[in-house]
Image 1 (tube, rainbow, N blue to C red):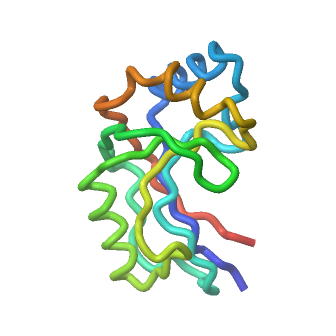
Image 2 (image 1 turned 120 degrees about the vertical axis):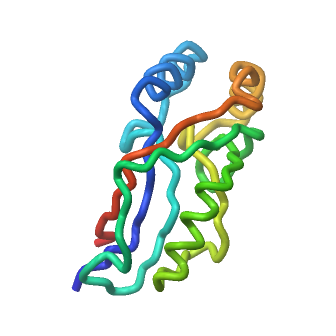
Length: 143
């Protein structure tokens, strides 16, 4: 049985190139397993088909509001009415997010050491207040 409960949107390619270069210029290893993205939904329920229409052509805007450690990553905190509305639409379609509420963020660096957060904060503070664009909404199987 499939678990089609992972929904995400990717940072647009132009901004992804800039972000990757800036992280590398700080001598940090950027997240490489996946493109830079926002996870909108992480639902471990069995689901053979997406619970609603997925919108790969829609572009969402998000404002950078901070940086913080989250789990095993340093993340860029985001604010976005559009992404919150999309999260709400997914929940109303029957998805159940493992974190309960939307925590809009984009992981920048995984497994940071004790100094990485300060390096990111000082080296990338020019992103604060800037708008990022996310598109290519996709749903994936969690298995």
